[in-house]
Length: 423
Ligand code: AMP
Ligand code: GLY
Image 1 (tube, rainbow, N blue to C red):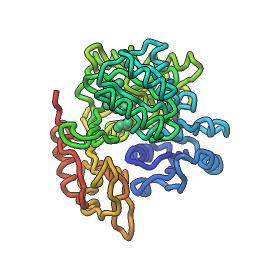
Image 2 (spheres, helix red, strand yellow):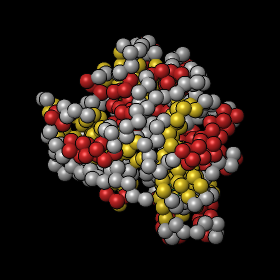
Image 3 (cartoon, rainbow, N blue to C red):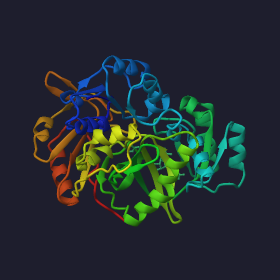
């Protein structure tokens, strides 16, 4: 089989690593891929949002399966584009990807089908947003969100009315997030522990992935601004069997079934961001893709052939399929550039990478690197994911942190408390 992976981050390197181990796969391409995917796949110089060029490439090369990493091409309709040409592609089509692409659609969908989530109001103008903020509908803090995709930044938590009006202004008037801010959602602030829950579905049958826990804030102790994720462990210490069942029955199954009933069959990865509130789990957001960095520890534990599962989802044939997992825990520590998650530095020489890559039990996924004359340089906010899987979480973290201490570049930073569980 010929497989194409779309995307360029640590998640896509991890997917390529796992997919390259499938006996079915004879040729693997990544578009555009990264320095890490170069050694296991052929990188193709195409941007992930050029969905027409990607479809033409896949048709020309007779690609048997395309796997999409990031949300942007999915919300732009890459699946529809490929399907028009009769090409197999893993991910939701444009209509189904609205679950991530439009916060208004997602919230109204959950309201229609009584899927537990935050109370909300939609405002299509600044005037309406001000009216809502002026009523006593919500207490503070509340959350103001741009409707569309805003690279994970369109969510503003506001402590008082002044800050909420400023947030509306930023999104709707200054257009900080472009067209994503034509409409805003104003919603209740949920408190509790935040967890994510990730499954693969063919639109009817659901195969859950092993649970994970992301570490979003940039500093130890969950301090500082949110990032895409500074590290992840698997399994999640906060999702026991009972909660797992509750999430499946109250949230995941109804989401998949109601999407089908609404004529938006959802095929691909469904990633549900949840808040474990006093009144049970409630949905914060849906993502229509694998997590980054959650995928990294997940593929380390996956014993089944990922290509089989992805193909079964595309072919609507997941019934009776399951994924076998190693019982050993796994983890990923993200090494980031100076400045990340704000404006960050690039072009710093990375030392020690070759030696650390050869340490037994350590797997390194590249996220933002560039190579030149046999040396690696930083080229992104998140630079590397250093991963491992040992008998216990403690030994896993010891091994990973030993590896991380062998890597160095100017102003490199990482959290030293990944996998340290606090209640
Ligand atoms: P979203 O992109 O909607 O998941 O929002 C990004 C982050 O903002 C989430 O991971 C939460 O930490 C936070 N967040 C979003 N919505 C809410 C909410 N209604 N209550 C509390 N926190 C929220
Ligand atoms: N790590 C968070 C995400 O993938 O959305």
